Amino acid sequence: MRKYYVHESSYVEKNVRIGEGTKIWYFCHVREGARIGKNCNIGQNVYIGKGVVIGNDVKIQNSVSIYEKVTLEDCVFCGPSVVFTNDPDPRSAYAKDPETEHLPTLVKEGATLGANATILCGLTIGRHAFVGAGAVVTRDVPGYALVYGNPARLKGWVCECGLKIELDKKKGNATCMRCGKDYLKKGRGLQRGSS
Image (cartoon, rainbow, N blue to C red; front, side):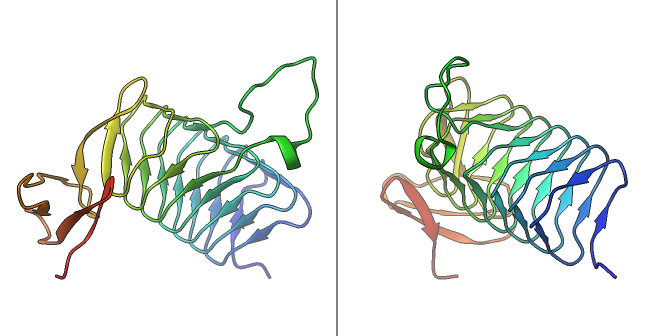
């Protein structure tokens, strides 16, 4: 007896691994070789491409398209109609080898992708970053960054709990007013402080 749920209207191809407690709802298509972790919630009309890797506790809302060579680490949230691309220069008349010509995309642990965001291929979305609704992401997003717009631009910083935090530009640190977590500026992004 399987320990996950797939609605009868969804189609899961062969050689797919699905973790315990995961739910795949109506009209989804999961392609061959995909790996889906434990306790994921995959909404209606989601496409998961061949060989896609999805971590544990990931929430994917309705009508999301996750194409080949995308990896979502643990606790990623994809809002409705998020789209990942995988071909940097698509042409209908010229076939490509997906193994060698498509670019990988990585969404790190705890990141949020708002509704209708488009993520161009070959990028990395940092840990606990927050991509606003409708954003078109054309470059890497640092950890804990808040980005939105077309193209997406850095607009601030967010805590792991999701609250916007204010960076003290002189000291290079921030503290979340909701949960009390501390952060330090490091490179282009933030990292958790000592608390």
